Length: 290
Image (cartoon, rainbow, N blue to C red; front, side, top):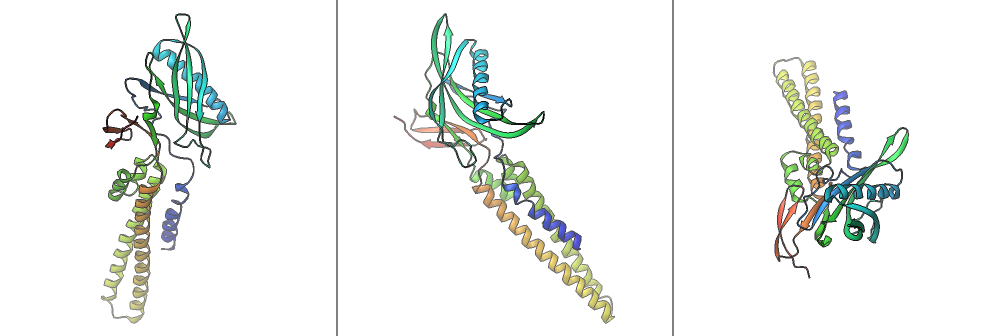
């Protein structure tokens, strides 16, 4: 009994650090949005630098190589055009910020620019040959050759709201997994399951000891069975409280905690326009851009 209680408390407590740490892996990694008639998206990756500035510099080289392959053009250079980056306390880019670049093409011997914006980035520290480098990913929007793209229609979000909450209502932890927080979701799911199983087990044992009490007239044995029944009643109540606490915590976290970043492309030419969310949801926006 004591070992079971210790195991239950341990499972429930280890969910606390699972809510902290690096943000979930961005949704666009491995599955970039498809873009539109004037732009496409490029995901670049590098683990060759130990600094953020170095990783960004490498990413521009990767961007140039990707554009050359995609558009079958020759890149002369990539240079910074505009910059409006903001960072949070962890050093990650604030979603209202951006970096824009001009990519100078060599077209039939003359220079012609196309434009690009770094939409979002994600990184974590990894050990490579004993050296701590950044495992860095960046998402760029690139205008198609011969067009002028409006990058203001791109938004980055990590808010899932009701889409994750209703999942966690059905299965605790499902909403966290939907947002990309698989470790946290697994702890939520496992903690709820362990507490629920403990509740059923403790209640079954309590009833068995109550039944044993009715089958004997020995006062000492009755007292022993009564003490055991009371112990299992206490365990049952602890499990009930733990199950409720983890479930409520699971709902609040699913609704409020940020998840993996994803991309929204808004149609700014139509006042009532569809919005495509690259996490699987859809919606309608009443907007007009001048």
